[in-house]
Image (tube, rainbow, N blue to C red):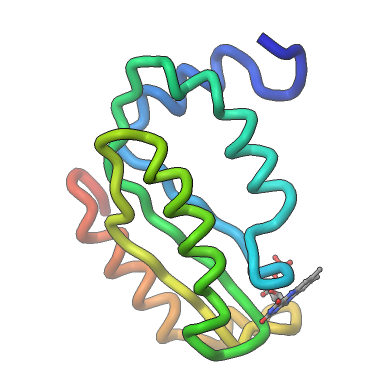
Length: 124
Ligand SMILES: Cc1cc2nc3c(=O)[nH]c(=O)nc-3n(C[C@H](O)[C@H](O)[C@H](O)COP(=O)(O)O)c2cc1C
């Protein structure tokens, strides 16, 4: 195992999670480098007895068009395609968020996030 910021405890925590929620802003129509590195460093889990099945995706972008999030969904689909038994169960794509605190003005996104969370078994 590589000695970096991902510890055995973190990998065990991920393995024992019921769901995974990937969260990222759109950077050049893809996930951030940080999220991609995190996904790549989760690689040891591929051969472990992981519990999670349902994957959720939350993303923000400056543009307010559905196509802006196409790359994000494809990136996470790549993860789902490799991890047998998992599927993307919910997505929240929040466009039009460019300046600090823009999200605070968007009650619609807050409501959508709340509703997505409340549908998760054993959730809110
Ligand atoms: C490096 C970089 C690349 C970005 N690329 C895009 C993009 O391709 N499309 C878009 O709509 N917004 C893009 N944005 C805007 C961000 O997705 C958006 O403002 C987001 O809400 C910022 O989240 P953050 O403050 O957590 O970084 C980019 C921002 C940065 C800093």
